[in-house]
Picture 1 (cartoon, helix red, strand yellow):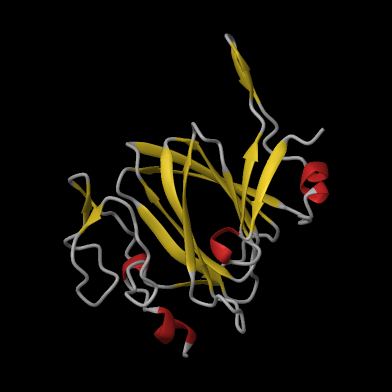
Picture 2: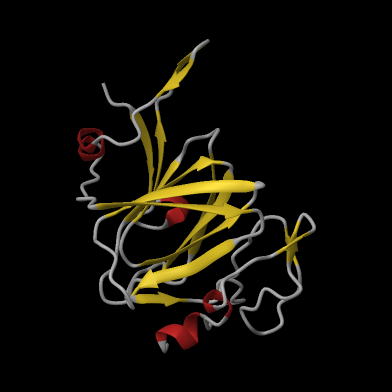
Length: 201
């Protein structure tokens, strides 16, 4: 019997999937399978994951939007502590939903996983005091292969929850906050350009 339920093509975007595991709990705690290739294949999902990554971030951190230029990766992401708002943007050339985004809250309580195929930009915003985020990849990390786009590009129109601030024409975090905490982006993530300038449309 399968241990997951899969919602496919979420947001009307082909390939994006939300996966909810079966959680078996009692007074002692709970048990769940966090990954089963067999269950994935039974649901028509077949990727060869080769690397697991994990990060910790504090409230107000926004990582993204990132993509790989020459060595794209499929990612299976989840929050194992705290809560994040996770976003994928379709940047596949020729896709009927090119430039469309989908976001989902991933938390340690809902235990949902988000499957993001190759050809998407990805980012997440930390909603809790701290969050631990982990993900599987179907290719190894390749230095100097990362590309990115502005998290606040008006053309994308991503509706990040709880963020307050006014777009000033760049990806700078200046003037933005969440629940009174200043938005926190890396220097690199504050220099990305919008969709059109990034992909030279």
